[in-house]
Length: 398
Ligand code: LMR
Image 1 (cartoon, rainbow, N blue to C red):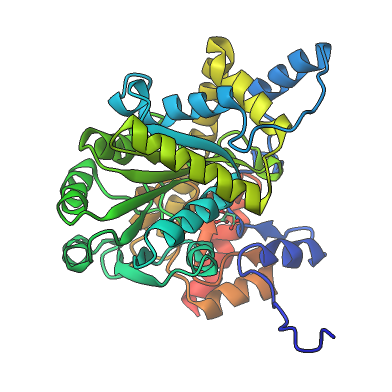
Image 2 (cartoon, rainbow, N blue to C red):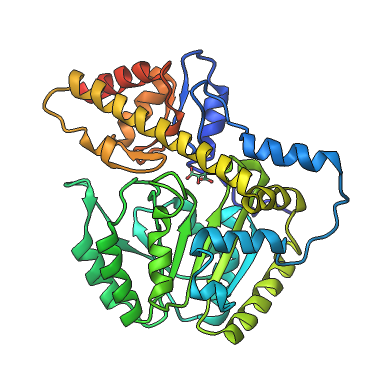
């Protein structure tokens, strides 16, 4: 019956957890999956979350089905976080937001919507991008192409080539953008570059799909959404997929959101109805617990302030690790420029290591990176950083 089924060999990012877990060496280091570990190598349980959960535990509540769109108080809080409470799109009721199953779920629901209402559109993603972007849009039946992005020569963005590419796309083609902390490179556009690029998006009538999974890990919650707010100010109609996996340390809770900004409240009504219908057919409705806790954190001034501080601590610790790695490598490998490590932002550093060098790190040192050279800096701490730096030196000098 099933002998025609193709074997799925596993995911190049998530599969690294299995390899890491199987490794019996005490000194092993997991720099693969984009997960924040604290100084002790543990996944943090945020105090803001624990406080919200403790409060809820005092008066336990039943677990009803949520609406197809999820918890309303969560969705409105997400809109405030992404677009700002005073944004015209928010106050005029032009944004359709649904609670999603992580950021991936938001991408898939958005991709289904694009396939249904813009079937001729092609989707363009940055070269490189998070591998799952391509899979998710292709799984929805859309054709996916790449736009120039990372410049391996300069460690920056091929901005002129990127602009030229956008100018050649057709009306309503979808451009997948990373508002902050680009995955996998850690190389972001400047506000001035966003201004120019979004003007082209508007002029060409492209459909921007902004995927933000690391809000707060670049500069702060507000600065990291520059591109999202600029698009809103320009009056674009666009998508935003967002996630609380990283900044609320909610990985396994699978909590995200899809927001679609429309030109009018009437268009929003239509879009919102279809998003619900897509959800109904895919998984019916999302889970209560994560949205309830996130809503409590986002809607309480006290818990929101505490959460902001906790995200700032994560961000600062990652920057300290970048600095330390930069210093050790610069001292030990003279003549090679490691300034990219401190210039890149968010959880990731595109290390420039070849697949062979990455394989050596795993086999000889038990250090796991994605084969494209992406390193999750948030897996470093003061206890393992010298070990990692020395291993880098060993593979770089051979
Ligand atoms: C990553 O890029 O490592 C994370 O977004 C986790 C994942 O699902 O790939």
